[in-house]
Amino acid sequence: HKGTEKLEKFVKRRMSELRDEIERQKAAKSRKGGGFAVEKRGAAQIVLIGFTNSGRSTVLSKLTNATPVISPYPFTTVDKPEEGMMEFRGAQIQVVEAPPVVPEGGRLTNLAMSLSYNSDMLGIVLDGRMNPVDQLNEIVAILEKYNISLKRPKGVVRIVRSRAAPGIIVRNRGRIIDGSEHDVRRILEDYGIRQAWVEIEGEVSLSDVEESVFSEKRYKPFILFVTHADDEIAMKNMEKLRNIGLVVPISPSLDVDKEAIGEYILKELNLIRVYTKPRAEKGFSEKALVVRKGTTAREIARIIHEDLYENFKYAKVWSKRLPYSPMRVGPDFELEDGDAIEIIG
Image (spheres, rainbow, N blue to C red):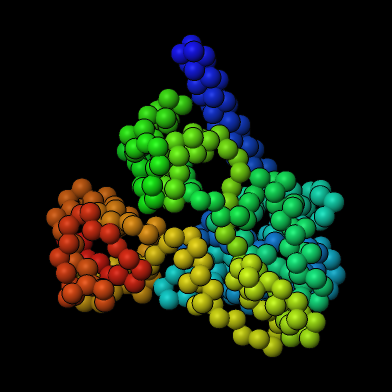
């Protein structure tokens, strides 16, 4: 039996190595041929998907400073994805308009799904004049075919392989029900992974950890954008979506609450804003660092500069949740949304 286990591990490890090699070749081919990928910028990337003439360009123009061609004719967005930045309270969210999803599949759907798979979040654009539930169900079915799920799992294991990682670093924000962080490291090492950031949220098992090494399925949080929202039929149709997720009405006559949308995105992605204070200056930075919830003072130091990380002594934190501000904290102090920090090195 031990021989069988060793053989299984060898096969899985070899599969992992081959998959890495395929991904490297794909990336190289994409760079060489121009590709259709969109480099991520800002705190997070949300990709707008929907059927032809659903109003993706209208949503993009409402959320960002982008000026896409808004046309009643189909297939306007086919040459390259349009993108823009949504700004709110010191943070920036990149919004990308994917090509239309075509029910029968084909090149455009493949491109839209490729962008969706690599995004942080999806903005599903539905035409309010037609049954939105039917549209959503059809889009969900297509996403599932491309290993993209909108159903939140009980627990999530994210493994990001990186040469910058000083080993296998486990950030456990949940609970490993049948093991420990040591077991997680051992599993990854068995598959030849030596440098990686591992994030655990919710309840996971060691089988979930092992599966995450090979699984191609990805969960994506989402927002529903309903266009033509000033139409009487659309108003009635939107009520059918209220229990599914955040629903944002879109029409030329309606203003969009970017701050509320931005806050929702950060919450769904488990991100927080941290403002920094250079030692020689009085005020705080207007632009925030957007980091994972639970990020420590020393990890912030590393983001700012490697020297601050290496020579970290302590930090000062300003926050309404603290008994007084600024408060002196150590390297393992966890920041929360809206905190301001000064690193002393």
